Length: 336
Ligand SMILES: NCc1[nH]cc(CCC(=O)O)c1CC(=O)O
Ligand SMILES: [Mg+2]
Image (cartoon, rainbow, N blue to C red):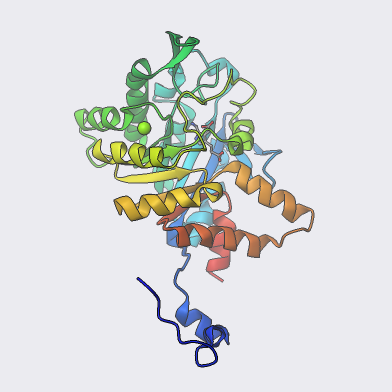
């Protein structure tokens, strides 16, 4: 499509920017509260709200404080929260067994939130890193390079994790582990238990990124992590490979796909939306949030303008929704 533009001085693009009303009329994209998913960190214990040092304004809460923590977001109309647990070290092991404990933090939180807020959608991460003592998303076995995150041995553990989460009330399963074939395995595992309505939002194109650093502090998996995740998360150099990953996950039954991180990967979001026309989500990850907040705290960026511009970028790139730690503040602004 070649846009037709009258040459200056007949054509004056600035006319369409003249006043707020005209700008509203010609705006191509709109961010709405319906687009927001809020990631929430939960921890063991009682009566505690503990700030995440590397993420100003973000807190972990104990389950008895969770309903009060989430209530304002529900009131603002945020459709979904994504739950992330900080597992105590004594509950971690090499196989990530706590992930499939039906009474783990996530499952208890899901049962509580389902009761308190029946219309709130719950997104549950599927990956073993919050539960393994080595901090990897799957289980380790002898293999290439000595010890290897074993794909096929990890799948049954991930399936069990997904099933216990779904039974506890998680409506949207979000596998973030990047094992091959996990979407198909999880879909079959859920269906075998009659959990045919559980949706799968696949972290289909997930990169081995430096921008997850603050998240690993928040859930306490960073200190534990041995090595890096480059044998399963994607190389930031690659774009065609992301299309193959997304194609595979959709073919295996993903209902929605995600690109992660967000801002440094807007090109991937655009390609994915154009190529697959599937519900597409972006994760504005911890490091992106912390980067913006660090500049905001120094007075170098305006909080609300910086936040809203960063979120609008995802809509412009083609995302249908965004996981963002800014969700409650953005929703409050959008509601005026
Ligand atoms: N697999 C777990 C997981 N799920 C979401 C994030 C990162 C989210 C963020 O940085 O905000 C990670 C960390 C990782 O893969 O190491
Ligand atoms: Mg894959």
